[in-house]
Length: 370
Image 1 (cartoon, rainbow, N blue to C red):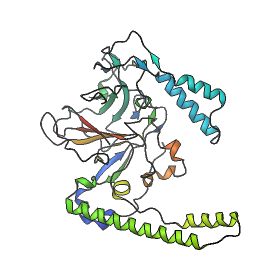
Image 2: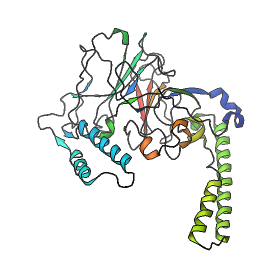
Image 3: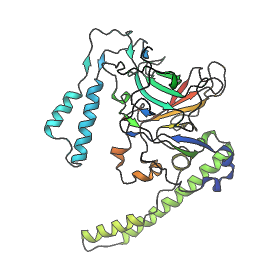
Image 4: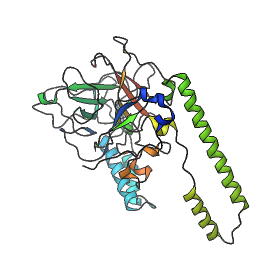
């Protein structure tokens, strides 16, 4: 199995802020990548080790569920696009393929399906504790976590929430596994449909979201980042001034100069949030990011104990702001085709943080989208 290795951080943040040593933690980056997992493996979108005599999770909340796209069409559309762009990055799909893609993008209506009829949940992931160092313990001696969600986002008080179902089990007790699980006929959003991925777990160091650090330490980190950004802006201004003072005899000469300037340009200054604290992508344990909203207390509704991060489900493994986390083995891969292996989309290209109670993992979980 090919490893995925996180590059060293741009700098040692504890050397700048020694107090961070007291808050240092670990998280396990799952590194999902396209593959053909089986039920004995940790995976995203793969077959689950599910007892044949146990009812498959289903959503019975009242919401529209009779109109949407077929999961098989979504998988085929992705396959056609991937093959087309790999074949010809400039031209993409052929005319024939474009006609087929138009057909596959159609929505379908199930006239005989009521708003409260059970709709099978999608098996999103299964994680064996033996594989993932930072996966929190389940109840008793359960060793396998299975994650499901409803493929429609019409839940909760707002009518725009998602519905999650977490199941813990002892894998050794499953003797007769379900070979053909039920599938929803249509889904409300293609981002709920995962592509099968194997995992390449890697434990890395992590630090809390800056807004949850002591106020004085957070202020010093902010001041340090502002100083770095001012230095970078001054460097850009000097470079622009140099360009204005230059003259070239030809377009080719200018392009050579511009190429040399780009090669010598200093990298963007590191940021605590994007480069030094919380890695992007799917991961287990560690600290939640609160970059979209202010930090929200996540206390258990049953016992009021502060909850801990169980799992982060991310829309991408890295992006333009978090590219320093791109694995060493994948430095040459283009971001737009390699950073979204699961094809999952959370909200508006965000991440889903799932929290559980450290006192009793059976207590109801909570979640936040960032």
